[in-house]
Image (cartoon, rainbow, N blue to C red; front, side, top):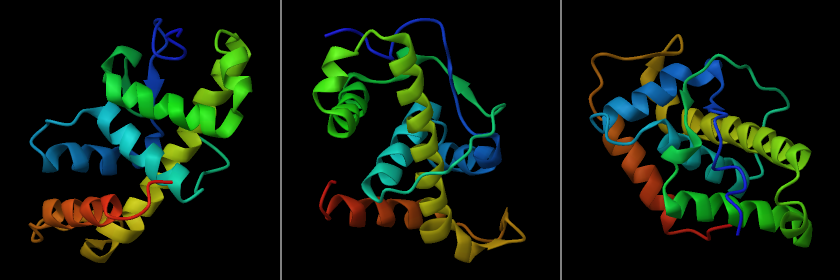
Length: 154
């Protein structure tokens, strides 16, 4: 199978509106998950709940497509196949198709981030800022992820 959208020099760009949230998720785990990990987490959540934005604001964090792990590439490819069926196989190398799918992924990322904000972070924020006095964001996020893992995948 082709490298689809995982090769080349075009970086993946995250929506700048969610920078503080993705940075918080990364800091919760001591920098271990990178932007690609946060992107896939939010993409899967957005896709699972059919939550996506209608727009996308550039200038957020960027990461190389090579940062996706093999497992993450498989997940993203499975989502593409679920959405497009055989068209995914036929248009694997079509530049326009790849661009459209990347943009769709970015919109699902936004939807997934909105889910995380609503279900994980919102109750412990003030004026859209994280509270310095609250220290259990990691527990909240892990609890949410475990609850999601126990549910139906798609």
